[in-house]
Amino acid sequence: MPQASVDRRFHSPQLEAFVARALAAVGLPQSDAGQIAQLMIRADLRGADGHGIFRLPQYVRRIRAGGMNVTPNIRIARETEATAVVDGDNAMGHLALRFAARVAMEKAARAGIGWIGVRNSNHAGPAALYAMMPLEKNMVGIYLAVGNANHMPPWGGVELLLSTNPIAVAIPALEEQPIVLDMATSVAAYGKVKTKLLRGEPMPEGWMVDALGKPLTDPKRAADGFLLPIGDYKGYGLALVFGLLAGTLNGAAFGRDVIDFNKDDTTPTNTGQVIVALDVARFSPVDAFKRSVDRVIREMKDSKKMSGVERIRVPGEQSHATFVERSAAGVPINATLLKDLERLASELGIEGLS
Image (cartoon, rainbow, N blue to C red; front, side):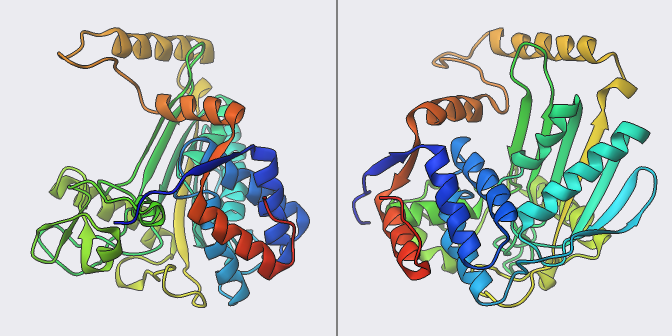
C-alpha cells in the first residue's frame, strides 16, 4: 500500500464557501448551494469524512452528466395528518431531506408524530444530520435510508442485493449532549472503504470478505468482495427491513433496482429515505424527559468498567468531541483529496482552497 499522505486543516467557513462555489458553478441556485455546503461540511466537522467534502467531485461529476436535477420541484406527493410522501424530483438528497425534515416537524407539532417517506432523492450524506434536525424542536428524530449502491448480499449469498442501509436516532437531553446513534447495517459504511483507498491505508479485517469468504483488506480490491453485515444474519435482517421501509414503501428503489451511483452518473437513482419526528411533549413533560435522559447517560458512563477500558461512551459522544475539536482547529483534508479539489476548482473556473 502507498504511504498515507499528510492532512492540512481548513476552517469550516472556507470549506463551505468552496463547496457552494462549486455547486453554483454547475447550475445550483446560490441558496441551495449554500444549504448543501453547510450540511456537507457539518458531516466533516462530526468526523463523517466519507460523506462530506470528499463527495464533492462525485456530486459535480454526476450533476454535469445530467444525473441530478439542479432546479427541482421538491413537493409533497401525498399526505395525511401525520404522514407524507415527499417527491424529491431527483434533487440532491440534502435538499430533499431538509424539506422532508421540516414537514416531519410540522406534522409532529400538530399530531405528535410526523413520518415522512422520500422518493426520487439522492445520496444525502450521514444519517445523523437529519435525525438531529428535530432536536431543535424538542423532538426525537429517526432516519432510515436505502444506500446508493449494493455492496452486501443476503446472509449466506454472494449476489449484491443490499446496501449499507443506515439508521440514525437522535434523542434530546438537558445538560448532557443528545444521544445520537448513527450506524450502517454493515460493519463499515462503503464511504469508509473509499476513504481508506484515498488515504492509501488498508482496511481492518472484518469489514469485507471476498467471494470465498476470506478477509479482504486492500481497498483497491473492494470490487472483488462485499461488505459484512453487523451481527451476521441480524444485520442482514435490519438491512432488509430498513430497505423495505425507506425504499419499497415510498415507491423508491430497492434490491436489484438500486443504481450504483459510484459507477453510473446519468441514471436517476430514485433513492428512498425516511425521516420521523416524535414530539416528546406528547409522551412526557419535556424537561422531565431530558433530565431522565441525562440520568441514564450518566449511569452508562459512570458504570463499572471492564479491565483495560479507559472510559465508557454513549452514541454521539465521539462525534460531538470531533465537532468541537474541528470547529476550533479546522477540518483535516487529505493531500490526495486536496489535489482532487484543486483540479475540480480549475475545471470549474472557481477559486480553490489553497
